Image 1: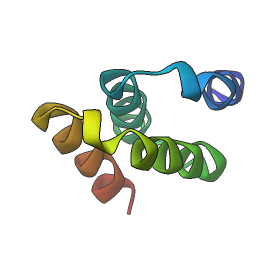
Image 2: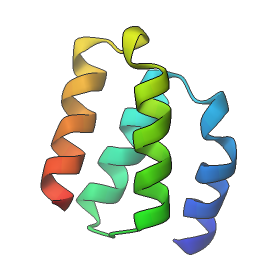
Image 3: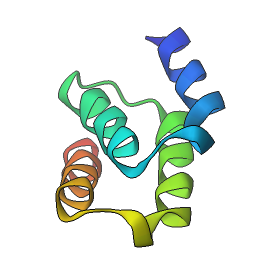
Image 4: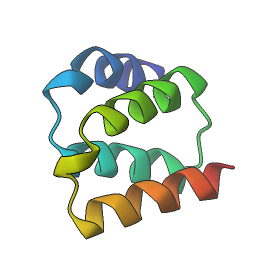
Length: 68
């Protein structure tokens, strides 16, 4: 999972909001607390927040709430 997290971090700028919410949701369901990935997801989500659909926002919020 470390390799997947590192790859996700390096490609996050290319992610659309659904991709961001999907990776957050995926790691929350495992549950794997990968702090660098969560910080990167958070930063990228904030940059693209205006483009998030309701479902993207809900899934991302759920993932962060689940991981605490």
